[in-house]
Length: 416
Image (cartoon, rainbow, N blue to C red):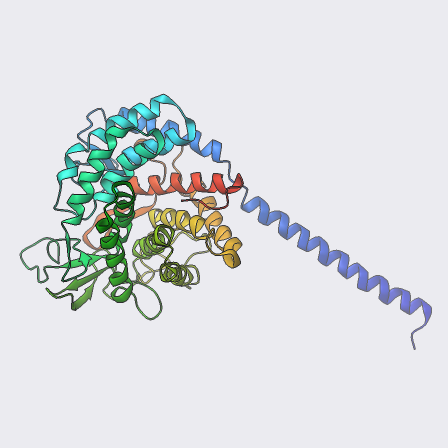
């Protein structure tokens, strides 16, 4: 039996330890909250305005579209037929959506109209990126009916790349996509999922159900053939004339069997969007499966901005891909609205990604980077293209994610 003095000693020691433990927990939580402050969306858009005024100032000719920077820091631009051309006017539309300033609407309209001839382009599957990010956002935000005809014509052009005997929209006309040694004539890349929203819109607007049928058939066959047992996706699947799978390859990833980060991002975003458009539960389930693979991968860094490929050989000395992080953040914000049981999980992950992207590590200071917002993206490392540079589509999906984040914080339960 303990004496009264010993009892008091033991009690004071026990509660003293609890007080110290509680104090340590409070300090830990305080440090954590300081390490990841809440984002100031208004401040970020203020920076975005300053940056894109600079980018506009350096691009007076609307036939030359911002794309990236070269290794020496000079501008790397593109023509309208390049797949990224729609992201610059799309980002201008997002600046208008946030600020409601006519200067951004006017700039967005000017650069949107610069893509007019692409409505007849049947050589690419990327018309969703090119036309729906530009004309589509313009129509959504202004109701300008002059945007409708180019959009519907572009949807018809995109549809010409769908062949019923294969059941997919052809991405490129051969694989590899350049050079004399191309072996396969019907490659389909996971990126193509991102262009299906364009067709679902065209179906609803025009009443032509064929557009939606093409989109769903493509999504179904991609789901069937593009994914591994661990729910990661291949970059490219090459098909024969009757839809048989010939080979599964990569063009932008580290290897045929690796998990290219932006490819996984396209898959999460694409199937989340297709669930929104169709309410087919298998699309939602696929989005969740790929998100689970992505978020639980042992090579995903603590700040949740991925290396350019999850299987790149020199991790942790490989480049990060801010563009993939931006795409996934935007996708998870939408996905959170469809899965009540995991809502907070997806929101927390997306918020961490946006906090990371909004830090000095990934965001250019005002006046730097020729006006781009995000640095540290990777476009095409295997062939030496766009390594650790800004990319216009990283900015686009970053601002899209911030707009979605703001809406959710304002009490809007679901965003698109």
